[in-house]
Image (cartoon, rainbow, N blue to C red):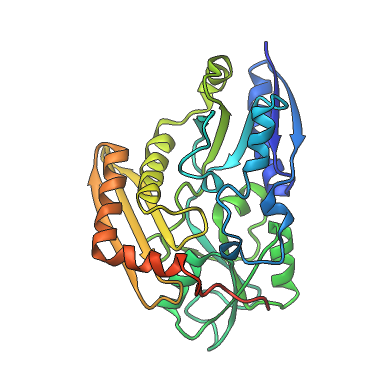
Length: 311
């Protein structure tokens, strides 16, 4: 049996994910070691992610360790992985997905609808901000960084009336006490790859790829490939106001895509069905671009990005 070294970020959620994969590999008889690696995104905590503007901010240092042979595989939240991997790497497995939705968390309020006027809602995601502004233009969106525990602690301390997080991370950590509303994808389109783990290896490392093959879920592979094809067509990273949500319906892929201006003033949605993940993703991406997505994204990539402010 093999000895495998896993590279991971050091947050509680990242470690849960890495240990989850470690357990599955050990059940196959492999010896597993874990190396914690601090990434750029972990070091910059006082700036909204959209202003950092670095593709691969949560993955580059881990890829460096892979390239140098210090680790054999890396476990990522798939939504953190750029759609175009750096040369020399490949995604060996995409695990079965957790719940892909965003959730509304609050101490006092049961849903977005019942928040008082000008309530303070925490998120550093332009995608979430834009869709919140469509639902409730009056809300004050404030920046929220840090790991899951930090974000929940700030909510409990009263820094925010509510915060928006991914269901997957809270479910994995068993921290769902403050989840008051699972937001349907048609109301808040999730990020591409949300809820899935991507296992990255060195390109051409067929031995490791074969050892990881049992982790690859065909449905997750198809849906996330479709979502990432849309994101790639739009030229977006994980911090632009783009949503993509694919699911299997009767043997066919159904894709919901979104491009939005951060202030909610312009939101484009498109849905299509198809059989080929990449073709479907690129088709929906092209439609969104033609309908005005190109001008929205051009404004976002310019200097005047309306990102959430610090509380």
